[in-house]
Length: 360
Picture 1 (cartoon, one colour):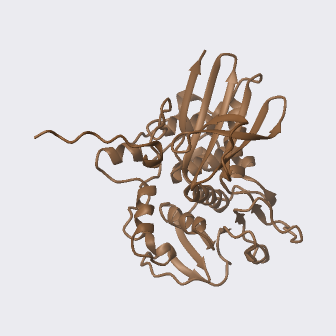
Picture 2 (cartoon, one colour):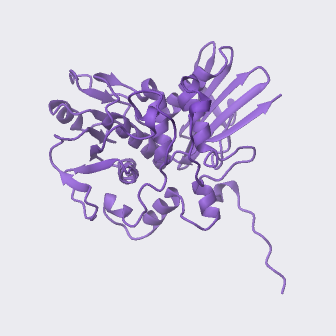
Picture 3 (cartoon, rainbow, N blue to C red):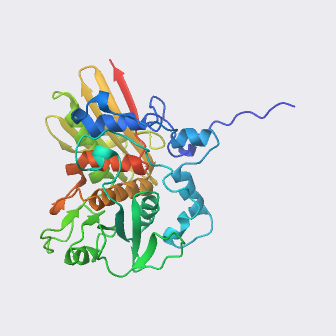
């Protein structure tokens, strides 16, 4: 009997995280790539000890545990259940890096590859971004308690509980740009993490740490671009591009993202002597980041592409880890100021980065 012909899937049908042509899935080299931009010149390569593990993509191909994205999609297509209860049955910490670096400093995630203490985080969520961020935080072995603000929970995880006040928490995180939780957190003197780029200007922060912009573009994108600019040659040109919802353009600045976003046209948003920033409209649920450095004939590209809500959730959860670890000082700040710690937290939580280098 003649076997059926192989069906070749289109880019739109590829599983999230699959490698585009010319890119290397950084899950296979993710820790090494992450250390390159996260540690930069601060680390002695000879002193770094890396514990390697199979990437989520390779595990999927080998028939082992699937990636978080596939698990979340199963929850969305199955019976609808209440918010964070949908995480039941997942192996917590499956996407966590086991160990990353030797002690480079006396404090911070960057020094140990782990948060500095058991974390107690309060979550105020109103969208799928917050729900996914909560699921990702439950995968953190350092999480001691996850309080869901004024919402009932049905999961049996002893770390998950309903809370009506945010006192006694290490950090409060919200995905709601109009939430009143910031005022409550400041009154309780608890660090707050906001998905929104800006907070209410009428609120006096005092000595309370506030991390704004814990999202894909301001958080992960600008942190990645900043770190790549630091480690690149001073004469190198840097392209920072991101996606945003909108109708695709037919001309403009050409940018190539990993699949399934692919090659797109973008519009210039900002340009300096060394850095060009480009926004790329996309019509669907996918999102991506590209940071490309050009130094002479050598071009190095880092790319991210996945479901937009998943990437936004990683960005929000990474901000929660950084704030709960006590790394954010008093007053308003953004993730770019703590790029190394923030990006390493995102990699631990599950961020995949594709890398590609070409020499003319």
